[in-house]
Image (tube, rainbow, N blue to C red; front, side, top):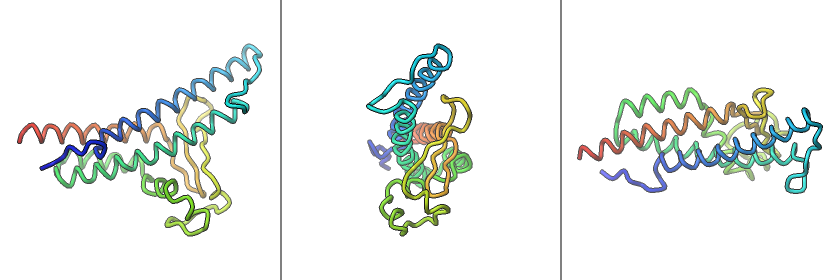
Length: 186
């Protein structure tokens, strides 16, 4: 039995999720600090990368969220493969929990990796809003700039990006623990 896939392990992609999530949280904190300074101390909103910070930071969130979607999908697929090999009730339970908390990983990965098909109106998933097929949008789920985010495309929404990332990292951890405990018994 060979389970050491290197970059093709759920745990590897869990680390990718952690890095991307860290980037989003850092930029959320930076924007929140800028807005707090503007509101409470009257400081002007600075230019960041040549644009108003209120435009730059949300654009960064979209960039990082797209990579998160791909990494989350990789965790899901590799966890299913891991479960097929290990047939572990713990991995199966973790997969069910993940599917309940993150119901759209296939659809959003499809949007990201096949954007050209959706722009041409030929994507696999039926879009609910064709006017929204030109780009991805990130929304705050609360009034807190440090809170969770949603990613929208074509009328579909992937809610709770940060919570989905944590669920994916937990799934990757369970797979890693079961795989390595299985290897230590052989």
